[in-house]
Image (cartoon, rainbow, N blue to C red; front, side, top):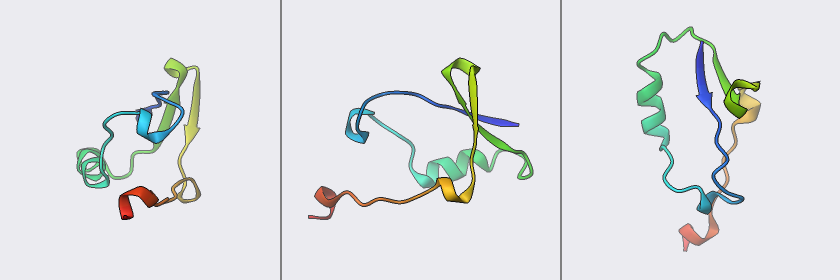
Length: 66
């Protein structure tokens, strides 16, 4: 199993600081067996979450487009 530890860095994306790009995330995940299951680990392992295609969505930052 692969775990992604959830963090609470802020109340808005711009408060979170640096985050990985899609390319960086793909590159890191390519190091693992492609059949491993991926889970979100929250609260130091107190709660866990699954990831499905429905959980991934894209939003556009209107300020970046200008």
